[in-house]
Image (cartoon, rainbow, N blue to C red):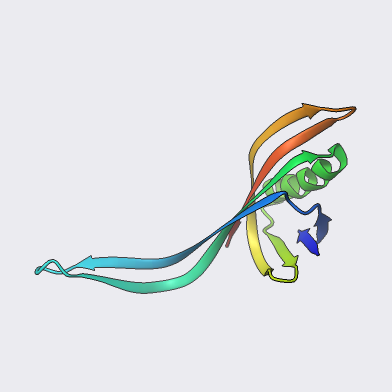
Length: 116
């Protein structure tokens, strides 16, 4: 089971949300019928959440994020698990980060990946 972002292995998240959007337009006819035209492809958004992410694991993700912001590079997001396979090019956004003291400062952290 492996999660990879920007070619670097990242720790498997504690929770994972996926939303798939389809580019489409809805038309309303004069007799109040609705029609939906699919005009583009499907794009995914993934929200990865960690509880107690170590400072080292956080630093790996932060380095990937910093490169994305500084250089504008999109990142490859790859997941290979038994019942889940994702291979997408994404933009990287930071969500909420909380700290938990426990010998080291651990992060309760959220990462948002949006397919380009």
